[in-house]
Length: 231
Image 1: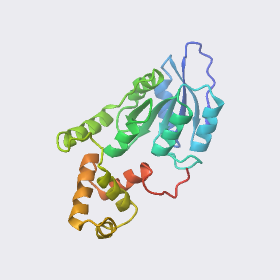
Image 2: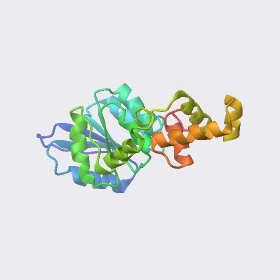
Image 3: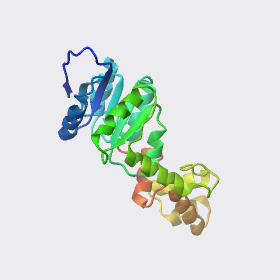
């Protein structure tokens, strides 16, 4: 964890950075150093120190890696949802390598959040910080492209918004992510294996998910199944 002393008087956006990669921290510090309206005030490497710093006050925007591997408050959707509720006036900018459309869409629903892909140039952090500071949103090009592809792939087929599952589809996803096989889910719900398989496929299509592992990851991130990760 580091703090930066800076006596310039023309700064008005105080930023807290949460990341455990020294190279990322260095790159962000360099990118923001020439921005007169942005001050990278402090950095933390885990969610425990993150919440502690935010409790101290004095920050306008949090720039955070999606994954913070250690800490009392976990990471991902659970962490950002918690921060949004506890610090409702704080702007959020999430840095991520995620390409799971369903998780990105769920993340985008968190209040006052902007998302920047690590696959995009770091310069996209600047408009993202400004957007978060003013209560807006900003998605970097890679994030926007992924979400647009997801929306285009599911529009017009089900009469539902992208990513919105029916109750039966949600039930199948929850049970599948909990470790049950298709035949076990069919027996539990008193449906045919063909019906369960079809509902699982439709759910994955709506969520823009192609691999079973990503479906399970989505269910975990959404809190649909129990994780051993600390909350």
